[in-house]
Length: 165
Image (tube, rainbow, N blue to C red; front, side, top):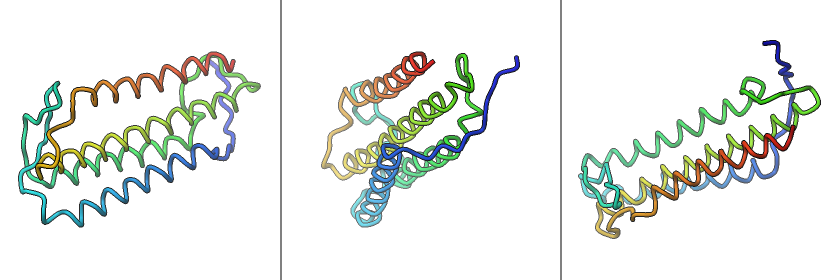
């Protein structure tokens, strides 16, 4: 298969920049909050929640940092991948539609990475709150909202990609 994949320099959009700044700011705030509250967090925190959003697994409070670390590492990895839209797989990519397809795919990746960082920050915050007794759990709707958010984002951008042919 001899597909056209031009390497184009496409600046990030305002929306991509706003999302990145907002979520990194949220991450920094969450990390700072964790540092400030560290001594008041019990040594044991929830590490797993059942389908009803209730904690059913417990571990060391360092797991709160692990959640933030996983979120940040995922965000960094996807930020790097964002810079190379010519390596993604596309339907019927042509020189005429390459820039539109690249922008669409890059925005999709940007949305997903920021949704994932938001989820990990939220999980760390809730786990700390449950451990301190200020929250009961995740609630039954958090996992479905996250799954629908990610799959909805992917579906939206796939449909958009088809329309951008």
